[in-house]
Amino acid sequence: NAGVTQTPKFRVLKTGQSMTLLCAQDMNHEYMYWYRQDPGMGLRLIHYSVGEGTTAKGEVPDGYNVSRLKKQNFLLGLESAAPSQTSVYFCASNRQGIDTEAFFGQGTRLTVV
Amino acid sequence: DAKTTQPPSMDCAEGRAANLPCNHSTISGNEYVYWYRQIHSQGPQYIIHGLKNNETNEMASLIITEDRKSSTLILPHATLRDTAVYYCIVRVALYNTDKLIFGTGTRLQVFP
Image (cartoon, rainbow over all chains, first blue to last red; front, top):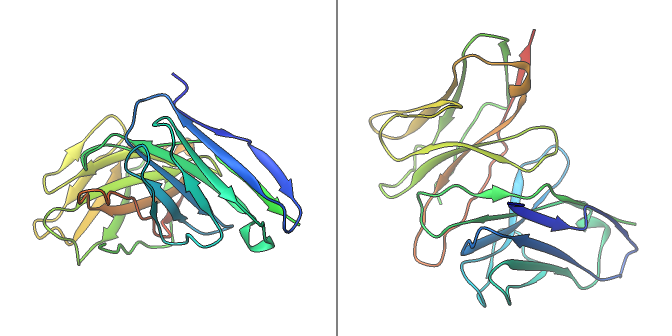
């Protein structure tokens, strides 16, 4: 099993450009999450989804949009990238239920110049 | 969501037990304590979780105080590969609002 796969692994954008980060999981998990991690800091939740067709805001949602059209995929979009969005982005998924562990992808390193 | 407090850094000699404390004094009765770790800049890795009983698995032990206001993660025989940032998370799963909120964690340095 691949687990949680993030695409791309690295990307450099110019200010104002748009892009979409893809997260795919093959574990049939209901819940999926997008986090960002800035240097020396912990992970901050951007958006999350508790099922296909549903999304919700996390701690730092501004400047990002998400979609969950298929259960296995969770897309994170930046409509107009800003240097403040330079970060490492992590996706995670887990089964429904509080007594379950989350699985994380290996991250996408995004630089906005 | 209940917040957690962890020391920013700790050291541990290789082969010794590493005891990582976490304070979660505002935890509610339906909230679990989870521990994850992050090695270098990799994605976080699940370690263990518990509600009120002590838990043990192949990686670690989790000791939760009787009042549930604090817990300790124990790595019984730390190795150099255990050097990482360890996150203590209190997780509540209400209907359609399940989420993991990370704090700043404890940076554990295991030395030879």
